Every structure is written in structure tokens, then in C-alpha cells.
Amino acid sequence: MASTETTTAAAKDGGDLAGLEAGLDALETVPQGRKPFRQTLTEKILPPVLAVALVLAVWQALVSFKVVDDPSKLPAPADVWNVVRDAWLQGELLGYIWTSVSRGLLGFCLALLIGTPLGLLVARVKFVRAALGPILSGLQSLPSVAWVPPAVIWLGLNNSMMYAVILLGAVPSIANGLVSGVDQVPPLFLRAGRTLGATGLKGTWHIVLPAALPGYVAGLKQGWAFSWRSLMAAEIIASFPDLGVGLGQLLENGRNASDMAMVFEAILLILIVGIAIDLLIFSPLERWVLRSRGLLVRN
Image 1 (spheres, helix red, strand yellow):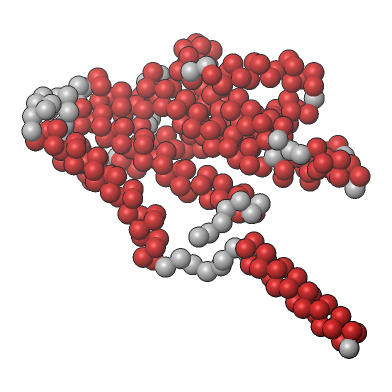
Image 2 (cartoon, one colour):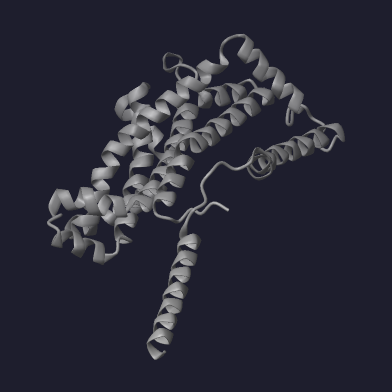
């Protein structure tokens, strides 16, 4: 009888433990499947649409109620739309966008190739960190527009000058982002890697870089922001016909012509391109990194 009761109790305890483990597994399991379109509409699409509609409504109200009664200072949204439509019909709009986007992406890729090994070197070599760490931090805080005059003097009014300004603006951010990510790698990971033979370049590739990926992605995102801002500053200041008309040049043309509709056109296009690059490239990359580490849970 005692043996039967002991067996029954053990079976009960085992069932309880199994149920507890199943419950914990269920808590850790990320639900799969697509969200219903209605949920996506209300959570992802509707909020930014309402925000844009609100901004347009306030903008139109400022014009309609004569809060700003000078059209040369604040054009109506319809006037800006007409300028954008005319540029599209004349086949110039995509040219403005492509000129700037192609420069920005190429400059960012060059900054990536330079900033990544530089960040690893600063993060892993103490002497290099002591020598270059403060300089990188100082360069990151330096406004990108400050590099335009010396770049023009050194390189002239050409695309090389544009890329130089982009590099000087973006490389420190990418390098510092990677340094921050490496600093946050748990020492246990490094010791485990050395135990398994992952030392030197092998350890950097298989242990350090994957563990530092969240900080590195944050640095890339900030590096793109600096690239885009640096490029706009260079295009505004260093205007030259042979360079083509990018978005920064379009903004400067609007200022020279005192055409606020063109100025607003350029500002909106710069903003839209920046948002589009973030949504198409960096946000999916950031979600992938977070999801791969179990830090992004779908509700």
C-alpha cells in the first residue's frame, strides 16, 4: 500500500513538474502567424496617417485664418503640392531624389568599410583606444557643416568633396557605436570563446561581433543620420552646376529665388527620404537583431 501511494505521489509530482515546464515553455514561445490586417491598420498605419493629417490641418489653418498672412513666408499645402506635381510632370523630381540618395548611400557604405575596422581596433586595443577614443567622441559632436569649407579647399567642388564630408560625419558614429556594443559584451562570452579556441580574428568574427550587434546596429542607424545630414549641408553650401541638383541644392535654389513653396518641397523630400531609408533598411535590421535575441515579443 505504501509503495502504491509513493508511486502515485511521485507520478503526481512528475505531472506537476511537467505542467510547470510546459507553462514556462508557453511563456517563452513567441506566437507565430501574421497579424490581422485590422490590427496592423490600427497599430501601424493609422497613427502616422493621423499625425500627418493633423500637421496638414494645422498648416492649412495657419494660412486660412491669416495667422501668417504673407504667402512668401508660409505657402499653403496646395501650393507646395503644385510645385511637387510640376517637378514630377517635368521629370525632375526623381532626379533630385536619386542624385542625393545615390551619394548618401555610397558615402555611407564607404563610411561602413572604414568605421567598422576602426571601431574594432579602438575597442580591442587599449593603446589605440586611449589615443583615438577621445578624438572619435569629439569628431562625433562636431557639426558636419564645419567640414564643408576645408573639404572644398582641399578637394574642390566635386563629388569627392561630398563623400569626404559624409565620411567625416559618419565614420565616428559607426565606430563609436561598435565600441559601445563591444563594451557591453559579457566577459563570460569571451572566456567561453577562448575555451573553445575562438581567439584572434576567429573570436572577433564568431564571438565579439555577434554579441556586439545591437550596439553596432544603433551606431549604423546614427551613422546614416549623420551621413544624410552631412550630405545636405555639403549640397547647400557647395553649389555647382556640374554636381547636379540634389535635394540640398534644390533647397538652396528655393532660398535664392525666395520661393518658399520650393523650399518646403525640398524640406519635405529630405524628410521623406530619411524616413523611407529608416523604414526600409534600419528598422527591419533592428527588429531582426532584437528578435534573434528574444528581445522582441509579438503581442
